[in-house]
Amino acid sequence: MIQLSLYLVACLVLGLGLLVWHARPESPTNRSFGAFGLLSAIWVFGVAFFHSGTDLSFWAPLAFAATGVLPATFLTFVRHYPTPAKWPAKWILRLNFSIGLMFATLSLTTRLIVRDATLTPTGPARETGPLYWASLPALRGIFSRCLVHGSRRVHLEMDARTGFCAYPTPIPRFGVRGRRLRRDY
Image (cartoon, rainbow, N blue to C red; front, side, top):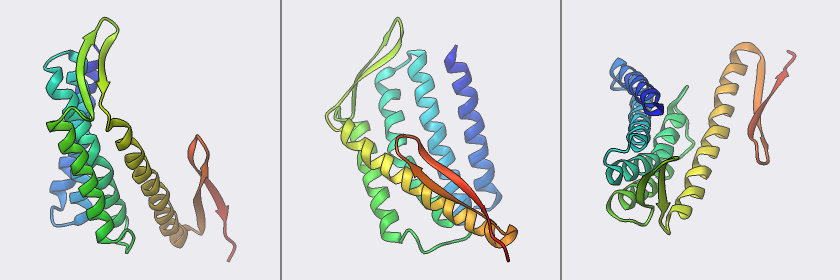
């Protein structure tokens, strides 16, 4: 039953990504958001088919492969939204795509990241390979840096328009929390 809701979510995310991409295909912001939506939909479809129990040896590695490239596409989107910025530099984007593509390729072609996906009475299960734990810090670090930097850029843009400034504050074990300050002119 859970896979039906996952199919619906994947279709909605895919539709949103394609809608944004086709609205202005020449815009790097729209292209990066569209690619992020497409990869997110592939990930959710992979998890949905993994829960359905059909062809587990294909869908589990595909979900992990899509997840490997998601942070790089999100980082590209952060660079271009709301206005193009100098951070991160293009070489950082290329490095992140290279790392993500490496983990995606390893996930699809070897058993180093995920292996032996099975369907148990309690639900789907999989065994992780030796490089699974090496891929997590890289992905988590990229996402957290994107969230902190992206939220600072968005809030500074809002500050110029509204006079309010919210900035993220890292909280250990809980992620990022925003603080709102009023600036007097």
